[in-house]
Image (tube, rainbow, N blue to C red):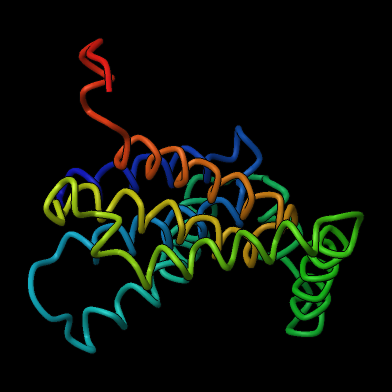
Length: 193
């Protein structure tokens, strides 16, 4: 569990680096994805407090990014447009513009159909998670990996201006993991069916 959290922190810091452009959506997406992955690693029933911590993780990551950027004198796009914005009206405009960018991606071509299929695939994976994870006996690492990948897709579609494209990519990665998990182990050994 600590490994998942540590990897999420390292990846979040790398994405938040001003030298890479301080990818705000990426930092929030990584925090949400790794938060869900860590949550999936926890044994037993989840408390409301634990769930609340995961819900606020993307916003805490954003606050940490802001603090690091301000303390290090970063001059990223995030600092110029958000941290030095002229009041809440400017923040609202930034928020609306990001939602519009993601929304435009959702209505192009076959993207509405593809996004719907991706969301339904995630929902099916959640509903049938016991069957999906049966080959590994509900191993927490597999549960965390698949849940984290799905969360990255869903929250990435909300937090990034690339919107549904990130959802499709993350669901594809999760599907590759699920197909591997459900595959015939005899084939991996070179045996025949």
